Image (cartoon, one colour):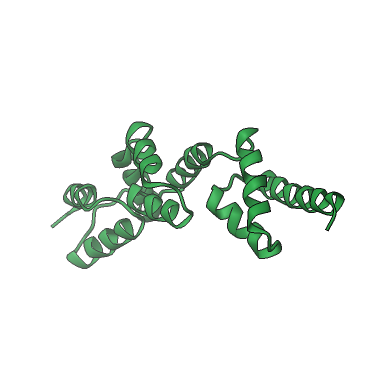
Length: 156
């Protein structure tokens, strides 16, 4: 193997990574996993990822900010977002920092998600309350916020 082959491999890995990043932000772990499916040289992949990070083309911080904003806008709560980001390899510290410091008003987002799904009518029976509670819990909202919402909309 000569230097030109290594350079070509590195260029190919980098172009693939940049193309993937062009479609959306990725966490380092996500991008590494995708590149590893296409390329066998883990050392080369790590070098490319280090270079992309140094040039600020790859940033877990930016990924977390965008992801939290996007998912919260779609009506998902902090517990679900935290779990999804953990699956994507985001460190717990980075996650905790962002969810605590730059967090949206989760109570307000819960109300918006519930209103989109159920409208503004009160729940007429326990079965309806349970259905709403399950929906909001599956969306990743903390049980305390869900209970407050259910107390407000209970027409029992």
